[in-house]
Length: 436
Image (cartoon, rainbow, N blue to C red; front, side):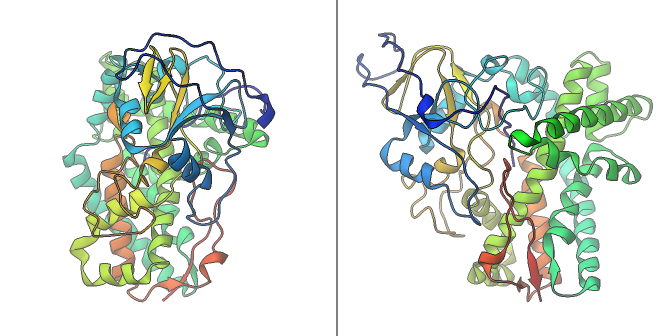
């Protein structure tokens, strides 16, 4: 699943610091009447920790009452627009008049005080045509052929890990035995890191994605360490070419298609989203299944349903807190009846879009027979997550392995006693006690 880390800004904000509306402008290239309604009031969004898989009530309220509104987040300056409805989210994420590149170097309202990834080289903070050039390089590693090569390795990794859990005996922590080590092992195979070296890399995803002012220095140190390790790996691939992600990036840098700094930043983006994010999101999926025993039983009886079930789980699970990377309007554009002016900051709420009742009837219900599976859990438009194909494969492998190895698996504690991550960008269980 895709990660959209938010950019760094200065000090914490408070709810009573909302800026005054800018003067109205008549420019509006979008459809609709020339006069725009007054801008809505700014709402402060603290983005607090939520229990289990509970959707953020702030997003629920906005989706019903003010689907295109203005918000202020805990850090940074000014305010931003927040778009919550499915069609509006797809419009903003695919229209070239909304730029991620314009965010670089600009202080905006945000969720965290420190950046997660480089704003100067990676895919996250650039626009076409440069974005298209870098994405084309990374896409060479996410092919059907590479996934077919990777899947048998992933299946063996999952089987070995669950064998270890069986030997440890019930009850056991599924996060410790499967959801933690599995995505790291798959990512190691995909990136090309030797198994003996991976223990040095395993903790950096957590630090890179930690939120809160007290974590700023830890996040910066993790970013420095990660860049150094990936630089070392890419240098090794120039001497020892292989058909893994590091090999793809090293060849592209040697050919002058991308810079060395771009190669490093691209590898960091894959590491962060492919390790920490998959760990938490897959753990949330399994928690959803364990708390819906009828759905779990159906997957045992109808294993061919698994790909559809995984798509519905991606839609259903709230995989992150708050919002990700914003965009900046380069022109005046009308969205959902609101006039967004040139220079305004815009956030998209993918989680709210995935629960838009106009697109997904009865959205709070986990429904494996849902007709529409076109969720936006991996984003939309030019920045749609390239690693989606790998995340889908990993989810299918993990769920299938668990149901095959432990057909009687169930939670070992009441659902409300399962502890979830706190003060992080990515939601997911810290522990998942199970028995069988």
